[in-house]
Amino acid sequence: MNTVRRARGVALITAMLITALTGSLAAGLAWNNALDVRRTMSLLFHEQGMQVALGAESWIRNILRDDSIDTQTDHLGELWASELPGLPVDNDSVQGAVTGKLEDLQGRFNVNNLIDRNGDIDQARLEQFQRLLVILDIDPGIAGLAADWIDADQNASFPDGAEDSIYTSLTPPYRTFNRSLSNVTELSALAGMDKASFDRLLPHITALPGVDTALNVNTATAAVLQSLDANMDASIVESLISQREESGFDDIKATFGTLVTNPAIVLRLEGSSRFFQLKAVVQIDTVRVTYYSLLLREPDGGPVITILRSLGTI
Image (cartoon, rainbow, N blue to C red; front, side, top):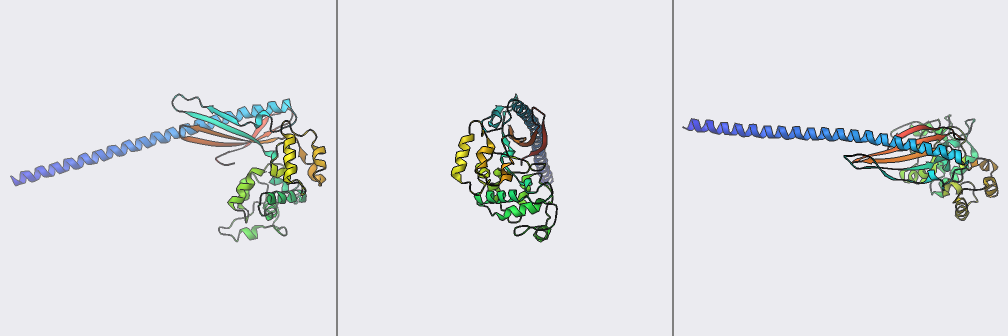
């Protein structure tokens, strides 16, 4: 009798273990299946978000091309400068929306302009960049570091330059770029550049391809306008922004010829632009796609070309 009872107890315990293992296995399979489904849906939503962002880019290219046909100037009162309102994404199963903003990159200081066509440091642009840094309460020595970062040689400029000999002694070591920037965020690697300073500087600078791109004063930020000359103060800039508010400046040379003492700077001021940046944010369910596109617009109704795309960062 005891043997039978022991056998029944063992059988009961075995059955309970099998039931527990089966339940645990079933729960694990269900959890893994749910993860696979969620992962697949996230990939599908991300791909859909990318297609929506590309559609927004195509729409913006048409707007820019039409604008170049209608007018020869670019200012903040035009349609392209309006922030894209939230538009719903057509999807029967989930909710989604796309928002966007187009910015004129020639309203910012082009850091690549620090080096001229001959590969030498452009002194006028270097001094302007130094003034911009002072206005933003950033060490003006960053200007010399930036120039050395993108020039082709290994000769550190005096007194603020730095080349490989400085950067290779850091931990971890790295080398200077020694060519034009493709993305302005590369300046965050400069010696002495902290995050707070870079965050203040970022809205006022850009890195555009080519050499000697002009500054569009119709869209330039207040700090960039003030950096044009040492005698420009906040009150003058406020008056200039008020003048350009509706349709831009009527006569750029006449307006700035008396305010900017360096003729080389005045010659590089324009009222139109070729480089723009689109930021499109697509939200589908819980998936968010932040898409940046650098656009080059050819003049007189020419094509608008996408020359750089990136996700999550400029």
